[in-house]
Image (cartoon, rainbow, N blue to C red; front, side, top):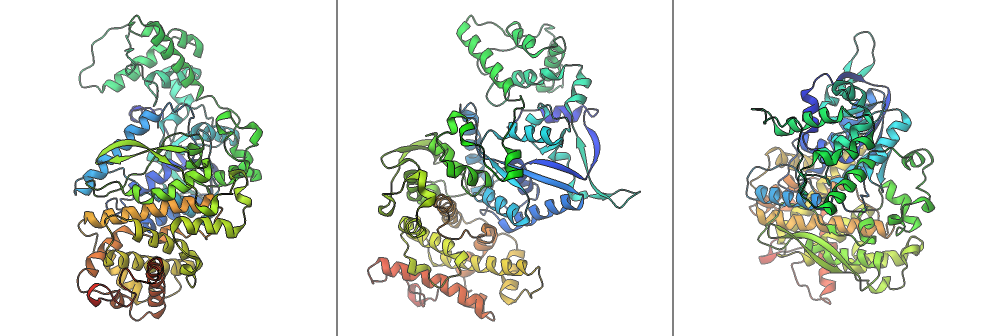
Length: 623
């Protein structure tokens, strides 16, 4: 998560960063920071739950720019984390901040930094479709990224200021200065390049006249995420005792004084041994020893060690299970490769280690219980498959606008009673499918006749319709299914590279999008936040069960600004038929999904319909 203020500090010292025309090179990309940056920098909607197709377009454009410049990307997505949970308090602080942002957005106020809940899954799928090599790292990702970059003698691209500390010979390219949208051509050749700025530890250490071995000490004292001397009651005392410079950022003054102090040392241990002289003593030796130990441990996070990513990228092999650190020994052998390929959710690592699980944050009605509650029964089955019954997992989620924790029991459906985690991947497909369908309360006959890639979205929608609170009304269901039709038409057109006509239905739906997002209806936002959370947890369940149903292309399942607009239209005079006319195949797809859902409702009610049929809604209104 980086060192607060360091990136700005380095930018202000212009001589440290050098202009570069980047081309014809491998590039190790911090994928988590990349998808954050691409989403927020493209000004994609944050109020209505996400416009995933727009985000997919941004990702495709980014990697096309790299390809045009002969750049070979390798993307690393954060998956594991530090087992000691040194950063846990910082994570909780960030989650509370996102809850506050979501609350502001729900009231129509300004807010930024809130990612749609399915964005990571969309990003991984787009990378796969583009054939961009990527790995979901099961260790602390920063060390692995830096180690691979050093091994391959290529730079790292990220927005994480920790990479100003790692001693990477080929350097670090801050994403903020990576002008991929302004790819240029050299005057004397036809070679394209991306204008950017390159950082090296050599330039930094030369500028401040310090030994590069001291950079980890600088980072530790400056206060990385989990070490901050001031916070643990050990304020620093500088020998010069000069007053604060007027009109200067206190952080800048702190960095300058710290670097001046470090310049008097040659070895890392020598600097660490002298740290007590910097600290105002509080006559508490135990706390002093703990602080010094924390500083020493934090410097170790910047030591480059042999990693597992090269083996994965070159040989398509996971780490040797016998070489895993103790805290990862809970992972069954069969899970290692799917985890690194990103086809298994990294959340299972936290669950198997019995560590707290932090739920996602979305824009919703904060006067209602969290939308994450709707899919809790699905997560309970995931917990049961991983831990067995009668175990509990601690979940952090919002209550109102405050972050709280609760214990959630693991359960196992009847069909899963004989399943063993170590052999789960070898269970017959019929058994894995039965567990999946039983969890969602869906029968196989419900899904018959649907395109295979839409079976899972329809199953999720049926589950959502039964469990969401308040109960979704007809326009909410209609708009969601019309959104799936829109995504299917876009997917088909893209697969044909735009060589097929857009068609009347797609034109009408795009026309609604071009009107711009409607004012936020909080009840609609709350309903669809529940649907997205159901989708997220069902995708995780499907992956854990080794895909009893095909995984859909998530970017085409939900476009928030469209479905919100559709709800407005459908609550007026517009009907689904009027939007789908002149395209029989789109109408047929819509009715097939609707009938599958409503017929399941009737079956659940033992043949007695508990809601409108596919032909009529309340008061005879057509669905």
